[in-house]
Length: 80
Image (tube, rainbow, N blue to C red):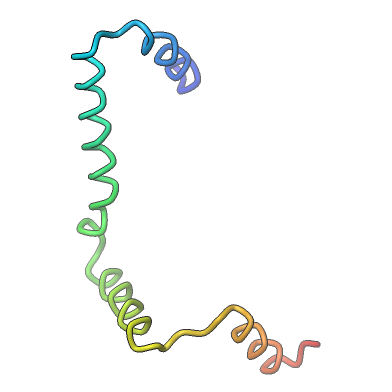
């Protein structure tokens, strides 16, 4: 069954289910969303270190606006 067919089936079926089933599906979906948000824990250590370094840069104010970066890029590469 394709994704499209499955989505269509669920759209039609959701109107017919009882409250108990609906709550079970909702709990399953909530758990799925939580796992997606907790995916940081599944990242390689090197990636986590880069993320943490970026967050620390933000805390320390070591950030640049898009306009500042573009101006520096244009200056460096002589782009008008």
